[in-house]
Length: 350
Ligand SMILES: *[C@@H]1O[C@H](CO)[C@@H](O)[C@H](O)[C@H]1NC(C)=O
Ligand SMILES: *[C@@H]1O[C@H](CO)[C@@H](O)[C@H](O)[C@H]1NC(C)=O
Ligand SMILES: *[C@@H]1O[C@H](CO)[C@@H](O)[C@H](O)[C@H]1NC(C)=O
Image (cartoon, rainbow, N blue to C red; front, side, top):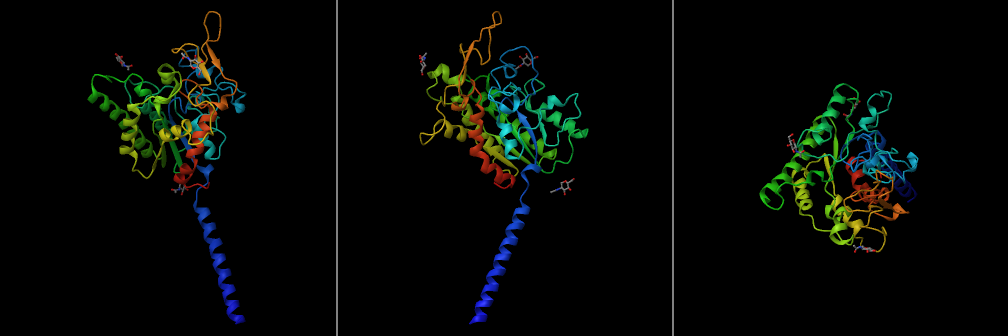
């Protein structure tokens, strides 16, 4: 009897030891979050300073107050981000164990001492995904710069553990051609835009990036720029463009193992329309509002310097910062919801 008990004890111990061993092995197999490199492509949702600072306009307001006002890591000053603080690329970087997005590509010029070992951010301003007229900022141009830096070894070619974020928020659709008169042309145009995104993703993978995160479109009809004039910030309006775009993105990229679609449509909606009463006090109203519907956050009268906008006291109570972009708190809420699926996709510990 005693010896049977002894044998059972041994078996239990062996089993436990084996269990410890296999869970340790499992942990070693998983990747270190901080060993990932990150390359960012896209527009104002992820730009961290690639547009040049020029005289204040709608296009350059990201370099002027009150942009950056909540950004404690940067003296509460503007950094070229379209937010009161961090943006989506910063929160992804934090999931990967860093403080903020990799440096903007723009900053690298003329300063070869920069440490780009974490990666690089190519996203710029109001970029289009689809090339219309070759401009410096559209997706293919951003990829072109990435390709060149890789070729010249300025970005190390050792990118076999790397992730790209592709974040286009819909500037292609600012002036959608023939929207009301030509339905066929209109859906074809959305097809071209989503095809450009899919082609870009494929180019990025060919260059050696192993995993790609691709934003689906946020509910564009919830943007304050539309709800202001439609209903004084009380409800989202329908956006057929968003629906068609997201359906096509799913068709083109949804089945690829190396691609994770980030469903900003559902995530924004969950935050703007929460099931319970918790969440942001202000879900439609922007923290920083221009006096005129056609104006912008940060706008000042060029004659007398008078501010032509109002900014709220507590940006963290607002989901939207300006007429289009989430606050830092808004982006945090969005990325908190996506964090688990991103970690699972990248095979890193949560
Ligand atoms: C593209 O360039 C052509 C010729 O330079 C110009 O006529 C057209 O307006 C431009 N389109 C856009 C969307 O900028
Ligand atoms: C990634 O590249 C490094 C250095 O080139 C190499 O040592 C490593 O084995 C590679 N890892 C994989 C998974 O290919
Ligand atoms: C919009 O709503 C605010 C309060 O929510 C109100 O003070 C304002 O008068 C409204 N504006 C218009 C144009 O209805």
